[in-house]
Length: 236
Image (cartoon, rainbow, N blue to C red):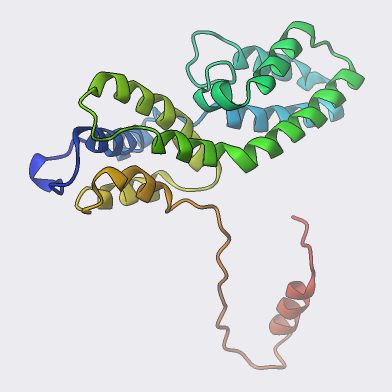
């Protein structure tokens, strides 16, 4: 497990900003990744999986058992990172929690009910896709990183990070890139602004880029590529 050295930290860091960065680094540590012990699931990712499995169940009835176990997993009290125990969903989207609790108690192998689950899960996922990350930013902004109440605040940081990292991995950021960005924060003089500065690297904005492709204008491969790029939507 990764552990920082005291001499590496910028002097403006506080105990809590150090804890935040260390928590991030440790959960995407190279050794943790190799052994698959890093956390990749939370309430957000489970709802996404429910959408996919309910869609599959409508096509293949045999998939119902997987859907049923997934719904039960979402409300397993001993699991920290599920819909019931997700810190952000609990605080900002309690109606979503109540919906899946009702589903857990009433779900049957019925195509009409599964179709309803699929559609409502798509709506829930769209809501979270708009709000989940901004909820995380707001929660971090409410922590007093200068506070001497380390234990109390570190528990809140733990809960937020358990939501944040699976979300970033789900969005396609690699453990290596998250780790590298966190490591660069160690020497930066951001002080108590460090957590928000860290999150600004993951704004989910699409980035425009250009291709430079040197070829003969009559090349058939070029014509095929141009034809491909003319399509407004490409189905994979």
